[in-house]
Image 1 (spheres, one colour):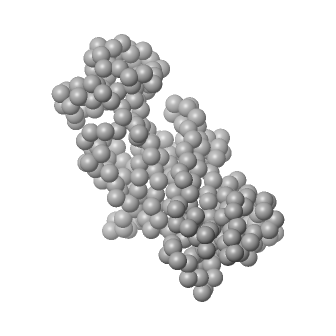
Image 2 (tube, rainbow, N blue to C red):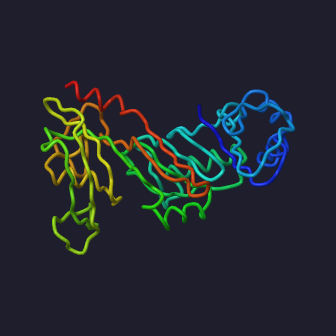
Image 3 (tube, one colour):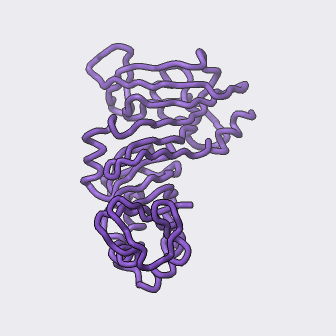
Length: 289
């Protein structure tokens, strides 16, 4: 079940704490939540005057009014007062300078507005439009800046699953190259040409007659990194219009790349966070062909 978490910073009673954290909700609505949907340090609590101490964690199960305003093109996997972890659907931009484009940011800002949260969504890292999967989005510029200032110290795990053309051999390895932005796409060089070093670790999970199912872990996070690296290995991602085969007629009709695992240390609370989604069913279906 999805949850909203709040960290207790000063001595308070539970009802008053929730009233302060949810200023746009009526007391009667908050009392309804207290009856069945509030936990303190993982234990269900319904007592209005339950004493809270600094350091405690108050969790609200995400039922009730917020469920009516789910974004259409993404799933909110986790939410607290500082950030979201979302599962972005394929076809949705992470961010755009054009106000008319629908993006992760516009979807979440609409959700924040409709749920009366006085903050805005800020990009922490991006996924390509046609890549689906897990992303962190912050609720303030300050939290985004914490990620930016110590990305490698905060983010411990970013893993993708992909379906690539052909049988990848060896079944486990590391791809290294230097990437530069070309006029139309990202260019790769096996030697240092002044570009940015990109490192991708991969492991073959399953093979079939036409495809390989891979797990890929990023050591660096460059634009289009996995797609470029698999093209360089002569095993492009299935249905990749930019880096794949021109005659690719994949039956799933989407880029076969999904960010399925994400691990990081919460930049405010210090809590270790780990999230994982199943492999997309369409990817597994491809492996039966």
